[in-house]
Structures are given as C-alpha cells and as structure tokens.
Image 1 (cartoon, rainbow over the protein chains, first blue to last red):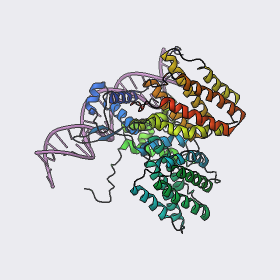
Image 2: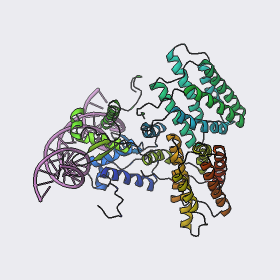
Image 3: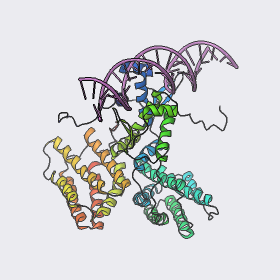
Length: 252
Length: 252
DNA sequence: CCCAATTTGTTCGTATGTATC
DNA sequence: AGATACATACGAACAAATTGG
C-alpha cells in the first residue's frame, strides 16, 4: 500500500498527460478557436514522445470537441469551439446510464421554460416571431397518418428550440435545448409521442399562439403564465406512459 | 465542388468510425458498466485494423468517459458509467467559449433551486439534515482571514451540492451541481467571493437554517419560498461585480 | 490535368511496463 | 521468483488527402 499521501489515484497514461498539457498550453498562450496547434512532428520533438502517443492525445482532444484536424498543406490541428451538438452528445452519454423519465424532464421544463418566455418578451425580432408562427401553422390541421403525427410533434418541440436559441443566457439556452433534444429522441426512437388526444393537442397549439402574441407585445408576466399552463398540459399529454428514456448514445 | 448528394460532411477518420462501431456494439449487446470489451488483439482481428488505430479508438471512448482500461492479466477495456465529474468537465469545455456571467448562472439557480427545495421537503434522512447543519455551523462566526472567507463561501456552496445530490431526478441533480461547480470555480480561481458584506452573509445563513427546518418538517411551499429569497440575496451578494467566468478548462 | 510538396493517417514489428497467479 | 496475459510505447515505413504550381 502506498503512503497515505497518495490518494490511490491511478497515474494517467501518457496520451492523457499530453492532452492535458496541450490544454493548459492553449489556455496560457491564449489560443482562440481557429488557431493552429504545433504540427505533429513538432509536438513529437517538444514532448519527446512517439508519433502514436501524440496522435492518441489528439484523438482525446478531438473526442472532447476541442480541436479539429485537417490533412494536407496548411493542414494540422486547430482549436475548435465545442459545438452545441457535441456538448449535447457528451452530456447525453452521462444520462444514458441514468434512466430518465418523462417526469424528470418536465420537472426541469416547468421550471425553466416559463423563465425563458418571460425573459424573451419584447426582445424577439419579427423574423423569429414569423418562424415561430410557421411552426404553429404547420400543425393547424390534425394529422392523418402516424408519420405526420410524429412530424407535428417534432415541430412542436422545434418551437421551443427556436425560443431557446434566442436567449442571451448560454446556460438557459443549452439546458432547454438539451431537454428538447431528449424529448425529440424519445419521439423518434421510441415512437413515444402524443396519443391522438386531439383536445389536449389543440390546447397546446392555442397556448403557443397566445404565447407568440404575448412575446410580440412584450408582456413578460403573461408570457410566463402561458408557458406555465402550456408545460402543464404538455406534461399531461406525455406522462402516464411512465416511459424511461431510450437506451442509446446520441450522435454529435 | 462535389455533387449535390454529398452533404459536404467530412468522412470520419477510422479511429472515430471504430469508436462509434464499438458504441453501437455495446448498446446492441446490452453491455453494462463493468462489462469487458473484447481484448485489443481480438478487436484488431474483428475490425481488420492495426493496433494503433484500435488504440486511438479506445482513447476516444476513454475521453468521453465511457470506458476504463486496465493493464495486466484480467485487464482490458471495461464499460464505465460516465461519472458526474467527467460529465461536468466535458460540459464545462462547452461553456469555456461562452463567457458566462454570474447573472446567467443565477437566472438558472433562481428557477431550479426553489423547485429542488420544494421537491425534497419531508424526504431527507436525518444524516443528511445533520450534514446540512454541519455546513451552516461551520460559518457561524464571521471569517477573520481571506482564506477562511473563501472556505466559508465554498462550504455554503457545498450546502447546495448536498441538497442536489438528494434529488431522485438526475437532470435536476446534475444541473444544480453543475452550477455550484461553476460558482466554486469562480470562487477558487478568480478569488471572486463575497466581499465582506456581513449583513447579507448573515441573512443567507439564516435562510439556510430556516430551510433545513422547513425541509425537516416537510413544508414544501415554505421551503420553496425560503429558497426563492435565499437565491435573491445570494445573487445580490455576488452580482454587481459583472464578472465573466474564468477562462480555463475544468478537470475531470 | 498532372505533379510535387506538405501534413495527417495507418500499418507493422518489437520492446517495455504492469498486474495476476 | 518466475511465468503469463494484457495494455503501453516506440520507430520506421508507407498511404492518403489537400494545396499550389
């Protein structure tokens, strides 16, 4: 047994060490997205390690979405802003093991979506308002086929993704977008979407219409309340099926 | 320019392909955390690729927190549940590029922490309630040194991490834990913690005491309201400094 | 269109490190 | 201590992709 000081922490493999070293190097040198890292050959020289080791380190950074690699002249490894899709997929891996329920997701939605709606009131440009109305119009008539039903459900989720994208708060924006992605996933891969409960569905559509008007008019309190009600019916629509999230990894 | 059919999507390198293939293989075969993947040699045979390529694929999965590797007999690559710390760090990389403000974080906290408090009322075992009280007691007296000040601030954040860990909702639990980690980071690496505003600080401490009592008594509504007030003063305490988050990568 | 230069991508053989029995 | 089974690391050669002449 090692001395007490050692917290029995496994020594990191060399590729991991190199990857971490490069991360700090990037931060210390203030490299921004788009900036190029030293070429493979130079890294081999600088770290005194074999090509394979350096390459494994690059794969680590790449997997985290922090760099992109291009071949050819002018190619190399470039610092890259982690994309929302990548962050979504990486976080999705965490919840893969967690058996999320629809109720779990809606507990968050019910807390966050009203806050988002209130904070966006009076700030949305006409194009965005029009885009939201396009969504609503796309499911004006009840769906006839099961595929149409699924499409409508995905579009009604997209409505919320569009709203989320408008928030100046990256945290709020990401959280809501992530939950929409989880629900979309559920819709696509588990065929778990609205049973043909026309009444509740039309109610949801009405809420969205009223919401757009409140947002346009800049009525924050009203927008918040409409979203509270909207979330309540949406939850009602989806719950009761007691479904757990699909056991699959997200792409990104 | 390539034909229209090609969505100008760069073909993934072979290590990435292998990593993805293994992911689906794991899901399809229903492998759980702790299960062993085929040995390196067998993967080389099965995929018909060189050792280096397979190893790079493993580094990718490892970076995502999905597997751990061990050397020696009985060693190999094992499926691993993505840890909260790893998920936190990977998501942190996304926000590294996003210039979060204290206000951004508190917009979420103000929406989520009250919900958490309400949902936990009457459910906490005595040990946890005691642990919460320990936190509160550890900053009963005003701090004398700047280090003590920092410690107290970190402990007051830990109070919320303990609460978050008690939620049966993994999403809610993770979100709050993540925000606490962001604020802790801010505290440690930017030395941005409570200016010695004794009044506000003591107010916060009082809120936490009252909160524990409401949680013990099972008064959900009261717990929610106390948390609403607590978040408001906490935000007041930290804001005005208009700080953006530290530009560094999290560890995990 | 082809050729050459540049940079990453992949392979193979070998040797070393590490944990179990 | 020694044998075994496994990942880890190295180095040299060759392949593929991209850019510019």
